[in-house]
Image (spheres, rainbow, N blue to C red):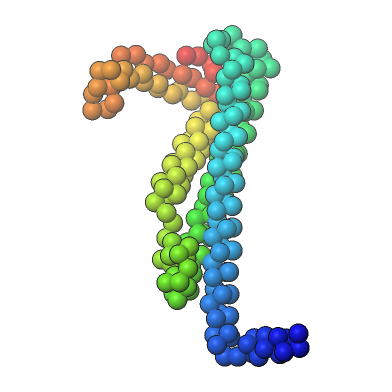
Length: 193
């Protein structure tokens, strides 16, 4: 047992072992950054899933009624759900941005990419294309959500033109414009449609 301990001590103190320590530290740092980035992306996705679940549950409760047929409590719940959804979309966007930044920073050392297959994806510091597409869609959603919230929740009456396109009669804009609606909103309430 003493000889085995002496041999192990000699090996740990040798130059051959020490030259791998920085490489191992670099790999661990990259793995930590990648894990934190993936965790942030998962947090953002979880928030978006929560919005969808809440909207589906609310839709199931009021599915056959128009807005005018809803009770005041249901209208207030719809307004609160939209407000919560906007906050969740912003939080998801922040989480996605943080995850993208962490994934971009997660870089394996050059030598490790040749030896460890998992490091090859982190070697160039780029975010996978499917993650980039999802991030672009979330940022677009946040932009639209900000515009919608400013229009619908503002104090001044806002007129919104709603165009209904028939996708069965294709046109360059997406479909034949057969019907339109003009919605007037103030303080989060529909004044007229």
